[in-house]
Image 1 (cartoon, rainbow, N blue to C red):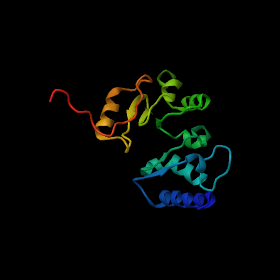
Image 2: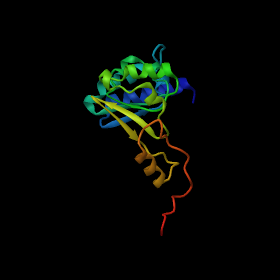
Image 3: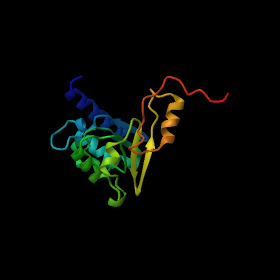
Image 4: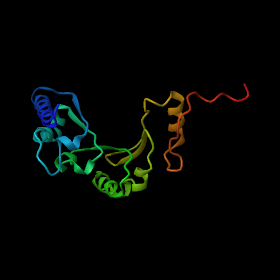
Length: 171
């Protein structure tokens, strides 16, 4: 479907959820397309209304994007939990950090975001900032456990995964 047609579908879904549903999470990938900062969008008004007013009816919007600073600020101001993955462009990282709604002394440093490995995230919610690990489907069980136990430092990013677990020594 064309992007214009996708806009109409997303608007129709948002309007339906707002008018008729409760206890629903709308996952909105590539949110910068549907909630652009400086341009119109057929879905924008309906999505902003859902983001701003849907919580009372347990209607939630999960937004994902690699272009966070290009999302309309009316929507971003409503976000209570931020899950930040790796970003590489310093100015974009700094703009992202400036928008995270936690005390300045709790905000992650740019190098913390720029050095995140596969599956590692920084989660900011309320007055809490934690490091988290999400198990990517292409990593084995034991590999995911090993990565998670390694910690979250730039000196120890996740590395390539061997195809089988290590053989125990002395058996």
